[in-house]
Image (cartoon, rainbow, N blue to C red):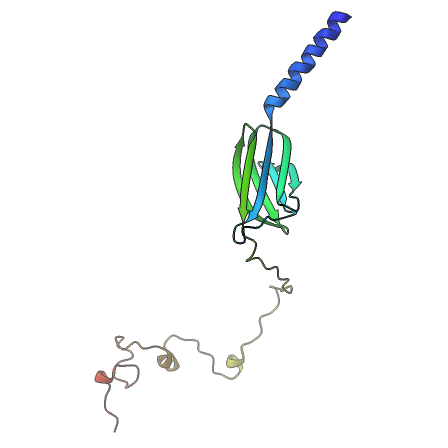
Length: 169
């Protein structure tokens, strides 16, 4: 019995040593790139493929710690206010300290009203009045373009340079 207990104890120590070699700890800080201030209460996620392996929150100083992650390749994702602002691939084989810079100052969440894209399109007011331009050759477009080199515009006294305009009588 004593021999079996000793063997089991040794196997437990070996398994623990293998776990320590196969796991890593990641420490870091999330910093606002513009203000250089710490970003508190951000979500820091470690993904393998699209599977979430670990998620931690930064503290009030922007610091985070993820201990005992299995060694391997991960995608680090930092989410601030529910938006993913940083994503990078990591190959974790030993303990690491990260400084992650994010830009949050340009984020403004706006709730827009719902739009029904299947609704019938309203008629344009100019179409109802018979004033809608439907052709590129509509003479009203000459007033918006200065294309004196196009023959269609030349010789009509409008849209050409003063040197090419016919005198008015």
